[in-house]
Length: 306
Ligand code: NAD
Image (tube, rainbow, N blue to C red; front, side):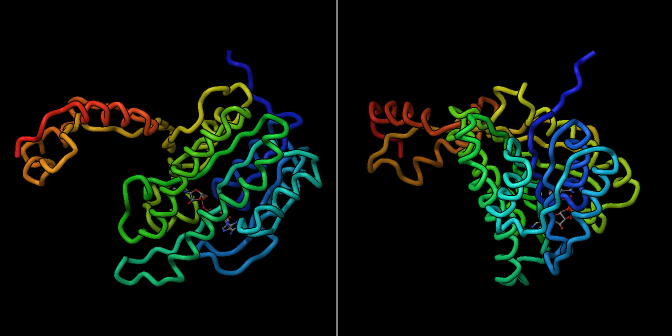
């Protein structure tokens, strides 16, 4: 039987831990020995209001079960204060779960700047501020684990959620870059697109579907990714929910290579259009480097067939 993964002597910061997925992360990591910072602003799912109760209830539950936790009521926009809570109370931070989030669903036609801005602020700036404040600690101790939270809405688009989709796909680019910059300091950073029953999804999914999508079923994958035994998986996207989990990656079609000179016309591209879109032969790029070899090949080619 596999050994139980433990997080003793580690500090895990969970943003948006007052409910939904965040609450389950907090309960899980506390039950496995970690000190947990239970951050939650305590507002509505649309980002209105604030309160201390959401975080307090979770901290009480952890303490009642014999675990160690402290509440933090800051908005993720004040990520530095949240990380300070970890350092002040537990002296360190090992794992950051950027989980807090809100929705402002509205069709693009009716989108207002306020709906757009608030979503970017909470999801994009919030994840940045928390990671930025944790980063020097991670670098100094040569250890850190970050999970950023994306969404199928960001990966595939979703009607009425263009603000949220943009913010959620931003988590992917953010994660990929942190993974590259953090690698040599043993800072691993992955992104999870969860699907789970919560107040966020209660209005958009039928009850029988919500029943099999308990947030609890997302936690174990994240637990594996942020454990010290994971030494290699970084910069990776996972979708996870209802017992399903799978890695996602970019796929590049076979593509066409044309001479980069005046013969590169729309007509020349149309002649190669099926190759441009041919996924029967594909690559899985994870950086820009392999584009450079194509550039070298293109330089050696003759003029294109216009
Ligand atoms: P939830 O509403 O139950 O939990 C989000 C928590 O974040 C709430 O407790 C809320 O108070 C807190 N929060 C909101 N704004 C905050 C802020 N500025 N600072 C601190 N805390 C704040 O929703 P959930 O479904 O558990 O979502 C958790 C994360 O997973 C979110 O990032 C969400 O976008 C993402 N997600 C969820 C699903 C899903 O199916 N539930 C799907 C895709 C992505």
